[in-house]
Image 1: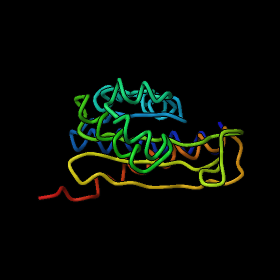
Image 2: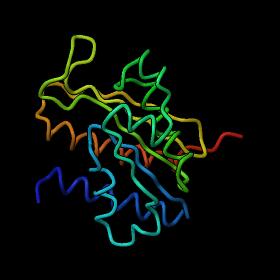
Image 3: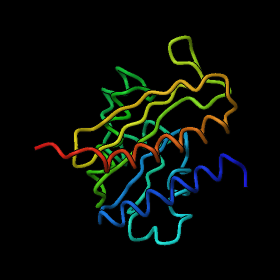
Length: 169
């Protein structure tokens, strides 16, 4: 097992354990990772107690149809943006039975980048019983596989961090 795969497995195991102990559930909304976060979580024994569902919303139409991302938001900001990542996480949480949802949308390359949105730009959001949180990463000149792997690690970390955030009152 590669170091990246081992790190993902360790993080996924930590998410499953922590959410099971907290009696909370998880959903994912993935674009550039294409279901890799859901796969990492469901690779862990006992994940059925925690993992509700995953949405692979690679196209803009899927983002709109499956998890309610606003077409106007996509038109104004593009799929790879903070606004869309937030709507993806909130939409996945609202469309599922999950307590917390994490989303990822980015440019994994090797093509598709621009000066404003280069390859390696990835936006994440996590929605749950706390205000939705956003994170932007610029992974730089990594390979497609490396960007996707790094994105899974960040998303799993955000799920762990969500348990440390106090709910809004």
